[in-house]
Length: 129
Length: 112
Image 1 (tube, one colour):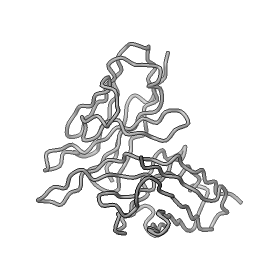
Image 2 (cartoon, rainbow over the protein chains, first blue to last red):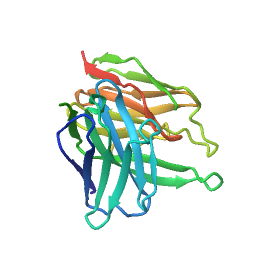
Image 3 (cartoon, one colour):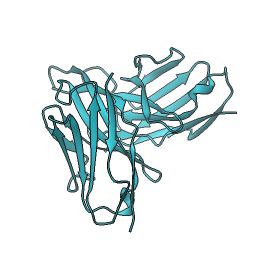
Image 4 (cartoon, rainbow over the protein chains, first blue to last red):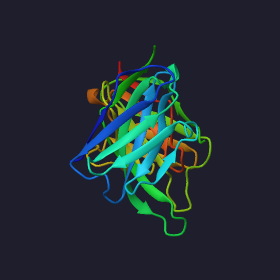
């Protein structure tokens, strides 16, 4: 059974860049049909979807974060990475890595049906000087 | 972005009694593929969210049949036929129709 484990610094200073890693076990990050999401949870904003990267490296970012966020795959280490620049205290949150599985694709529109079925335990990040 | 609104925000329940949670979207989640792209998640205390229901009414693997989802368009409901103590936590609806994916603010279910 696939498991995800987030890791990274617990404390980052304002204006700095956050780098998080999600290590995948029990499966491969480049397996077909999987997309790798980053979702964060803060008391003030609830659950916020940050974006995803597909198994072949295509990305889509939440427009609210688009200029600050980058996601990548490291297939040799079986990891998914998140970089978030220009941090402010508002970025303080628990950051989750989560897999979504494609179970259908609409022939006519290409719309992908999927669900987020595996979550990591999350890593807490505080932005403070 | 599609705005998801849940009600109530807090729901005290008695074990063995039913519970009903509501979720409303700012636009229809019915895709021309015929499916409503609405998922339900439960976040138990101290845990990550876990998938309960996908496409409005399909139980995820391993989810007890006391959980059921219904609804179409912009109004959706999660029902628990007989609440058990292990069902406490925060329930979130999430629209999966389009990016950015968006979540409701959650309904906290607690035992009376």
